Every structure is written in C-alpha cells, then in structure tokens.
Image 1 (cartoon, rainbow, N blue to C red):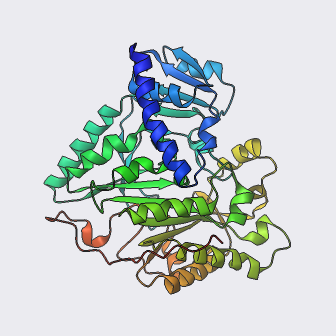
Image 2: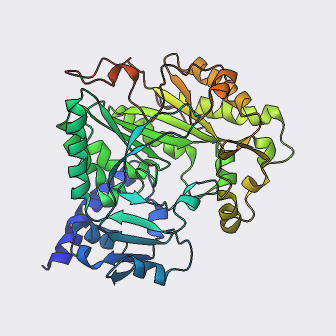
Image 3: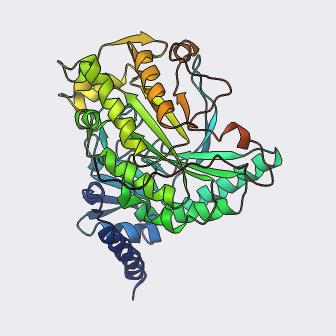
Length: 417
C-alpha cells in the first residue's frame, strides 16, 4: 500500500467509527464540510497525514498542488467558502490579544492553526479581517504550533500563572476537528502541563465532538467548551449554514456529561424589532427568554458572556456585497469609539442577565468588549473581571491542583422543545 493510500485508509477507519457513533446517536454528518469542492495543497505538505485525512473526507473535491499560497489567489475570484488551503503556517501560532482602548476587556492567549470559516454569519468580522485571504486555511505544520504552545506554558509556569489558549477567534474552534484532529495533538500535551487550559469557541453541533469525548479523561476541568448561540429566529435571519441552536446545545450537553466545563456566548444580541419589522418589544425580549429556557433544560453553564452587534465601519460594505438582502443592513447604528453600536443594548443586557441569574444560581454573567458605562447600565459587576476568554479568578495562579469548582447539576433529558 502506497503512503498516500495508507494515510487515507487510516483516516477512513477512524471516520467510519465516528460516523457509526453519529448514527447510533441520531446525528447527521456535517454537510457544511462536505461542500468543500477544492483543496489546495502546498507541495511540501502533500504527503502529510493531514492532507490524507482531507482527501479521504472529501473524495469529491478537486485537489490542486501549488508551490505557494499566492497561486491559490490566482485560482479564486473573491471570497470562496468552498475552497481550502493546506500548507505550513509562517506566522506565529501563539499570540496575545490586546484589548481595545476604553473597553472592559483583558489580554488573553490565542492559538491559531486555522483562519476563516465555512459558516455564513452575515455580521462576522472575518469578512473584513480576512478580506485579503478570504478562504479557509489550515496549517500543515501543527507540530510547530504545539512546540510554541509548550514554550508559552513553560514560561507562564515559571511566573506561577495559568494560561488559557483560545481557539475560535479566526475560525470556528471545532468544525474541522474530526478531520484536522487538532484536539488529539493539543489536549494530550496540555494534560502534562497543569497550568495549561483550552477555550474551544464554536457554533458547531454534535457531529464535531467525537474526538473530545474520547479525550475527556485528559486535562480534566482544563478544557472549556464554549458555544456561540442565539435564538433560532435570530439565527434564521442572520446566519447561513450554521447548525440549529438545539444542535449546539445538545453537543454541549454530551460534553458536559463527559466532564467538560461549559460556557456560552450570546453574541451578537439583536433587537428583533429591527430585524423583523412589526415585532414588539415583548417579542424581542421573548425570544431571549425562550433561549434561556432552552439552555436551562439541557445544560448548566458556569459562565455566559453577552455581546451586541459592533461592526467596524469598514465591515458594512463587505456585508452588503456578500449578503445584499441581509436584515443586518437595516440596523440603525451610531459611532461609538472605533466601532458602530446599536442603541438600547443595555436594556437587553440587563433583561437577559436577570433571566440567566434566575435560571442558574451560580452563573457568571459578563459583557464582551463593552464600556464601563454600559456595564453599570446593565447592572453587572465588572471587577474582578470574569469573562469567557479568561480562567476564573480563583484559578489564574498556578497551584498544585485546580481549586474545587462549584458542582453544577446537569439537567435530566427532556423532550425536544
């Protein structure tokens, strides 16, 4: 058996087991991934196991070998969510996010092995951030990234600090994991570094969790699964091709049952009255009340971060080109610092926070990239800052073991709403 065929055969065995798990649990395979129809491979990476897995997962896709990434842009004409480039990453995998001026936010660690996303969220900042390279990129040299991660963990341990690495800033944090096997490279390594943590931010559903379920015994309580959610009526108006909210929550339920810590992001929050003219304030609040009920019936998050639509003014022309009929373009915004902001968001923050705190007695509720004034209007405590991208305050210093976390009951299964 030749090397390429051996790689494909090995992956297909793993994929067969995964699909069997999906069938047994009533889960459909992720059709979004299957829509990739062109795989560009940098010549040095063509014999890698990663490329073998992509070829096995996407047998219908055309595979194009290129000598450099510049050749990819010669093949494509504008943004293309059906194309993927696999090649060595030249930029650093490990970096720090530095908060914007005037916002209640914190510096946190990021790990980047993928950029861009297969989902079509109308409001997504990646349309602007990745406008020069508007296609999915996956690093073929993940081993280099793991070494960077280890070096950062060793440095932070010497300073008696924990470090939580965020994946999901520049790509969906879990969508491609069944193929890339990022989790299988990183979680076992984190297991050996007590100060290491992972923050997996995603809109993906239950079809993407099998690797994490198998790895649940490693780095216990230090891998946090985070879903970005919204009411289904908001998703239907502002997101194309993303899993239903119930699928995202069901994925979290399985992961919480396996022992993972769970957090949520409800971001961006929208006023339904602006997206769907004729809606009342009661209806606008009501869809978020129903979302909290849906969450309460399935999971118990330790933290929920709230955010609102906050585009860079330069993002709006990109939204107009990609989604000319999007209701997001109808939103009235005003300039506030470097971003555009929606009016009255504090009212929604306060209302949703109140519902969350009534539903979950020990939940932390935070705001994402908001001003001190907005925190005060929403009647939320900003000090000490507890938000999704950070470890809890009590676990930020390195100790022999993580502090005992409050026991969070997992709701009993109920019939789907």
